[in-house]
Image 1 (cartoon, rainbow, N blue to C red):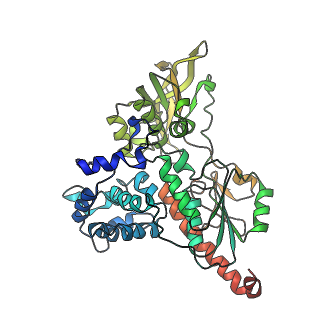
Image 2 (image 1 turned 180 degrees about the vertical axis):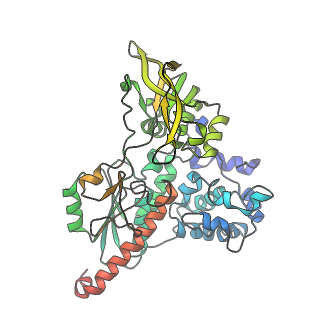
Image 3 (image 1 turned 60 degrees about the vertical axis):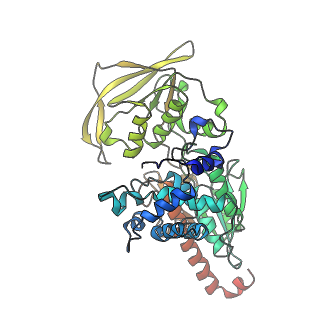
Length: 464
């Protein structure tokens, strides 16, 4: 997406935006700065306001995009934000992190003749307008007397909590970490989403009457049974686990990619000062980690055992990394971290060739004998995906391929227990916006279950 030239108003807005808080290194200012009021109006007037707009269909949460853009064009930012947040309560986060090139903007009819409407930046403009000012757009519904526990305050957990609160249910949101927001707070680099943005969304959920309890971790079946005895339904937004071990000599010297990203947001003083960084992996998280290292001044090389065609990262992310000056070595498999006197010197690798497709349809890489070589580096980051949610087995849930099994209503194999987000991956690839939609599906199903229970137990419902 091409940025507009910034005028004085836009520069002033950028300099005073929470996205460029003083505690952040200026090298990590947002990739796309906020639009000024004038820029947003001009961009909004480019929209054709299509009937049966393809951008709506391309949005997993089905935001009425032409309507919210038309409201920006008429200077109704509050109404625009309401249109967005009614469909996607995490509209501020999704405006920044959604792969709009693959979704709404990719479907824009203006792609054929011009450039697509900057839907993501317009969405951010409207949502930031109300959230930075603390403008309340929603109220909790009339109390139903029903209680729901939500485990995990990532995008799925926040989404289901907000939707249930708007329907009048009492929601308690349990988060094991110190801050709410899950991946948005801890796992998305500052260039895309500063901590302040995700924490605003946590506060927006609190404003709906949701009780947010941090430092509360679900560890096993006994804990789930306790929740089921105290609440009418439970939603699990467990996310995924840690970066798995590679099982290679010298692994103790590897830096966890997720931890590296988290430290870059919350504890930048902990990041190593490295001149030559090697990143193992080629997904979006690997690119994020590589970008941080590159912005900190390091030469960065990414290693991937397959080719560019098999990368799991979005194409636009790959091209972004190339524009940052990040190098790639494909068909390269690390086999050992090279160190001397406790200091990393590089990574020993072997060249790979591709063979028959695996169960996922991607060609299987196999090593080429005698092709060993060393990629020099003084820091090595592993970002090779995340482990499946091991807790699912301990909770007694049905699991398939490591993911929690749910039906189209996000119900698990246990009565009154629902799940969504990355731990289920039931709809499309894992992403923030898909997790938000999972939360919406689950909220509708839980609400229906609670209503059905109230109708079949009217005396119990009357006493709450």
